[in-house]
Structure formats: C-alpha cells, structure tokens
Length: 565
Image 1 (cartoon, one colour):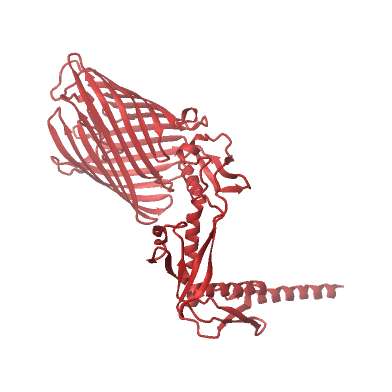
Image 2: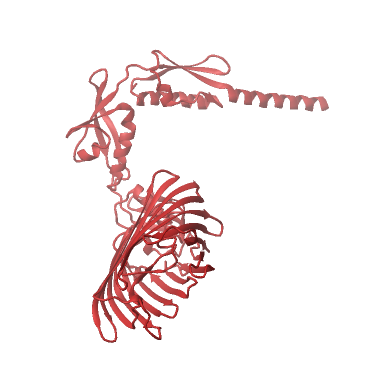
C-alpha cells in the first residue's frame, strides 16, 4: 500500500511538471507567403508565447484582423500547423497592401470641419486617410455622433472597391438609432447628497441629450467639491423608453483647520517676533453644502484681524445662494474697523457665478491725539456690491484649481463727521497653473485693488503683505490706496504628496495719505507635503523695496498646516 501511494505521488508530480513545462513553452512562429514589411511586426507587437493552445489560436485569428488593419485587407490565415510539442507555425497569405482609402460622406452627418480633424485631404463629399488610421477615425466620428444623443450609433464602411494598387474607395454608412435623453438620476452611496449641486455645480440636467463622455467629465467635477468623492465611474441604464444614470458617491469629511506660525526679527528692538494665523472652516456638516468660516490673525505687533463668513448655496433648490460676512480689524491703539456684507450669488453655469449685495464699513479712531503721518478719523461707508467669478478645477489633490478669475466692485460713499464723498473700490484676482508635465508646473497669481476717492484716510486703505499676499513681508503691514501683487511659483513634484517651489513676488503700491509710490520684491523657496494630518507648507522669503537694500534679518519664515477632519 505504501509503494502504491508513492507511485500516485510520483505520477502527480510528473503531471504537474509536464503541464507547467508545456504551458511555458508553447510558441508561435509567423510565416507569410511574401516577406513581412520591415517594422510591421514591431507595430503589431504580437504575443509569441502562450500558456495553452486556445490562447495561441485566439492570437492567430487576431493577427488576421491586425494585418487587415495595416492595409492587407485580403489577408487570410492559410494554415495553423503543429511542428513539434512546443512549436506551432501560422502561415498567412497577405496579398496586396493598400495604403489609403477614399471615403464618401454626407454633410448632413458630419461637417467638413469635423472631418478635417481626422484627414488632411478633405473635399465637400470625400476624405482620404491612411488605412491604419481607419479604426481610430471611425471611433472619433462615432463619439461625435453620441454627443448628439445617438448613444447606439453605428458606423461602417460599405461598397469597398479597389481603385488601384494603393487606393481603395468606400462609403460611410451611419445608423443613428434612437436619440437618448437623460430621464432619471440616481445617487448611490450618499442618500443625503445635496442634489442641487448636480444641476448647478456639475451641470447634470434631466431631459438633456445624453452624452457618455460629458457624464464622465461631470462625475469628475463632483470630486472637486471636497465633501464628496466618486467611488467608481457613472453607469447608464438604457430602457426602451428611458435612460437612467447612476452616480456612485461617498461623503467625505471636509472641515479644515489651518494654522500659520511666522518668525521675524524686529528691526528696532532686534528681538524675535511671533505672528499667528488660525482658520476654521466647516463644510457640509448639515448635508446642505453650507460653509462656516472663522478666521483670526495676530501679527505680534498689536494688529488683529477677525473674520466670520457663512455661505448657503442653492436656496430652495435654485441657482441662487446667500453669503453673510463680518470682519473686524484692529491696529494697536490707532483704529478699529468693522465691515459687514450680505450678498446673493447666482450660478450662471458650473464654472461661472455672479453676485450682488450690500457692504458697509464702520471705523473708529482710537488715538487720543493726532500722530504725524496718520490720517485717522471716524467714518461710515456704504456700498452696493457687484461681482463675478470664474473657476476651472483640475484633478490634482495638491492643486485643485487650475484657473480662477474674480472681479468685485463696490460703489457708494464715505461719511465722516463733516464730509460725505462718493467712492468706489475694485478688486481683481487672476490665477492660473501652467502644467508642463506630471511633475513640472508654473503658477501665476495677480491681485489688484483700487480705491478711488477725493481724499483718503489711513484707516480705510487696503492692507496687504504676508503669506497670502507678497511673501517676505509682515502680515497686513503695508497700507495702500492702490496696489497690485504678482506671485509666481515654479513647482516640482517629487511624488503625489511632496513638492518644492520657488518664490518670486513683485508688487507696486501707492499710498495717497503719505504721497508714496513704491515697488516691492520678494524671493525665496517653499516646500509642501501632503501628510496624514493635512497639507504642511514651509516657506522662506526675503522682501526688499526700492529704497531698501537686502538684509538677511528681513527674512520671514512661514509655517502652515491645513488639516481636514
């Protein structure tokens, strides 16, 4: 009995070894009746080793189609012969090779401009393309057909004829099928998702012509919301009388805590100063897409800035949303300014929104007596607010916004104890990322502000400088009636979570209260890390002006951590 078991074990081992040896050594040799053109097999790149005969036979049949796609339309597999236990020979009859095909088309189906995208030789009713490009050309034209709602459109070449040894002719036949429209939208995975974002943010609308590629792109747009992620691509269910699209979404925590620590040397006392920044952002905790922002800044020089803002998008499932904001700024014992605004936003399309509202300023002079160079008075300002924004997102976690354009105008007046003046303010912001490849990009950002008035007060001027403005200068340390800041960064990604960037900032500003015009420059380097706790940023920059030489003591170090929870 023992010897019988040994014999069975020996048979099993031999069988397994034999099967593995055969599976690893079945090879295919390609033979043709005429020499194969040089480089053709490299283009096709066929598999020559197989695990079993069925895989080899499938590849042999596929090669017939691939030869035909390369212009050998008469190609046939003549024989599949077994030469030995591990070698099979495929013998093909290639025939003549045609280089081009002239295809007749109708302008009712495709415009001449559309055809020109796939052919360099186009007339009003014909176009010519190399035969290896036929498959890609028909695929492109089929995609163009689906954009019109013809999801089941089929294209084929009929009446193929031989004109000469290098040219074929054919006619383009199209069966459009029924036009499909989007009749129903179903959300899977996030039952309480605020559906208004589908229509107004992503542009997904019912009774619209169904376009598969557009739905995929809209699904990517939803990823940019931050409080939701897509689990997998959307799916479409076609019935005889309706089309249903399923989106697979998952709620994401998108609350933000952001802190900045800055260190600098005081020029007067030569002591190290500390400045800080805290930002709390609560998003979509009520499944409404709402936002609550609380921001506090202190620069170590008795300068404080407090901000509260709330946003309520798509009220009553309309494209109209509301925003309320309160800001309080205090500069040591000089002045304190409070500004409030309320506005309504209208989402014109997924990328563009416009808004209108009301904004007021109230400022108090805290000085016991006048100080030279400080024009500070109590005042109240009231403005009508108009503006618009354009945002183009991109699918990059570290840099989710590719392009941003913002314009804000304020028209109104300022009233002091003895005067009342008409004023207007304008703010523009333009930023764009130039992506050279997956690792290298260049970032540009420009912010410009203008206050137009007959007279100017120190406590009504714009304040800029710091990590979110021109780096290398203290936060809100520069007063200006007009200023423009250009931020530039050359960015290099080591991987998807780590990048390094240059800092080159330029600025120009005017201060009408001091009759001052000056240019500013800032140079430095920065590092960004995507960690489990959030995005960590470390910046070193040194700022100089026209009237000031470079000093190492002016170098500012900024550290920030944006943590989502």
